Length: 259
Image 1 (tube, rainbow, N blue to C red):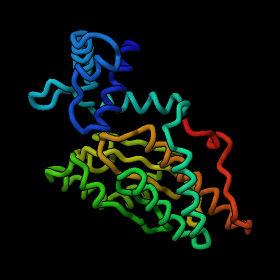
Image 2 (spheres, rainbow, N blue to C red; image 1 turned 135 degrees about the vertical axis):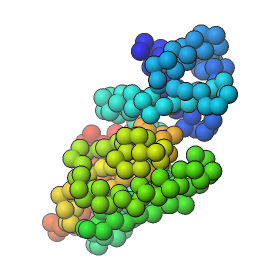
Image 3 (cartoon, rainbow, N blue to C red; image 1 turned 120 degrees about the horizontal axis):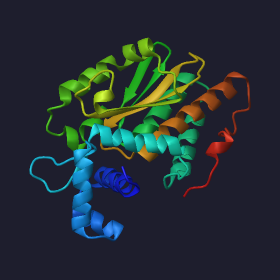
């Protein structure tokens, strides 16, 4: 891909996340300051490469699993050099909720999941010992992708099997992102699974994450999930070691101002 094609793909993904409708050439032409014909040509090339597709007879395009993967890899490789707006305020809100419940590790983890649900609009989950806490099923199924119900069975299968899969697979990366058909379970669910590993009093491999549509504000959601895992690990470790629990400082790389 050329740099312009990469930028157009990113714009399609980010616009689609906001409007939940195919992104047309007129919108992108205004954004890039070129003609609609130029954008249509580039979109056709992206489609030929398998990064976008035209649903039904729409003139607009939406991302494919492959397009999302290229985009997410770009975010990961950039190491979040440009933070989404308001991410620090959201992190502080999560940390505050965790601190209110930090004397009980299970309640602290549940509060972190509940915060993620509120901030992302996705289904949130976390392992608490050998159990799985989950919240936000209504939020997930209220997303436009799932209103018709054709993916309900696949999504339900993913939800039903996430806990045994986590126990068996034990993902080892600090942040794991499974997009669409990459999902180890529920491959046809058209969902994205974002998981952060963290240490807790229950296990060195505790997990917190979200399940949402592939149409996702990836930069923001990935950073929120990663930071929530970091908040929990720091908070629960500090409490377990008998600290005064008044303030939890995030690692230095997290203490950056909002962009």
